[in-house]
Amino acid sequence: MMRVWRLLGWSFALLLLAMPVVAVLNGWIGGERWPIRTLALTAPLKLVDEATLRGTIAPLAQGGFFAVDPGEIRAAVAALPWVDRVDVRKRWPGRLEVRLTELRPYGHWSDGRLVAEDGRLFAAPPGVAMTLPSFDAADGRVDEVLAFHREARPVLLRIGSDIRELRLSARGGWSLVTVEGIELEIGRHDALPRLSRFVRLVPELKRTSPDRVLARADLRYTNGFALVWAEAAAAPAAFSAPSPA
Image (cartoon, rainbow, N blue to C red; front, side):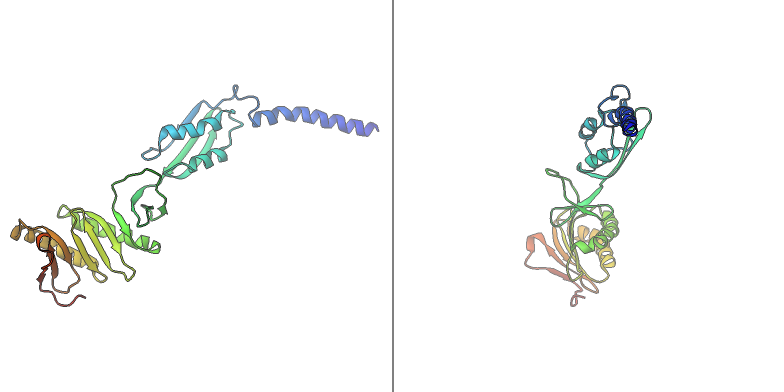
């Protein structure tokens, strides 16, 4: 019987010793004595709203240094729009470091999603309006589309133009719309050389037809192009145009 009472006494003593530790770790006590005094955001923010970020973290950091759960904060921050990766660390005695990387949008995808610079597709946050190129292709061809865009864009920039829309058909045919609204049908084969050849012709077209507006160009020819002018869309002008390749 004495052994039982002795065991109960030791258990009660250990419980009394453990209770303050449990209370501190749960934030019941000690929050004022060991508070989080500094919240350090170790990344420049371009898309994530800093006020929203701090407002998300603050309620989770009120229990004091020992009670702060980095995993809980990490999950809450990761749920914010534009957040890609999050790392949360505590530094004694009262510093909380939050390092995050943002999703970097590269363009609009065909179904309303955005595509990141690394090729990942993600849902656009509500109410977002961004001036980005638009892409239309199957999801499995994202890398192919971005690679072609990165090669084709400098070609158009040589003549002061840019790509507004880029499409890759199910059969592998490329087409695009420039920022001026000119539709270019490029085709499946030798797409970049064909585009480069057309761009070299543009200054000559502007010189010889300064008052005409080009609406469409079909580049799918071995030795030339088929051009459609805005004021005479029904009568395309062909330049050495055998059957499409």
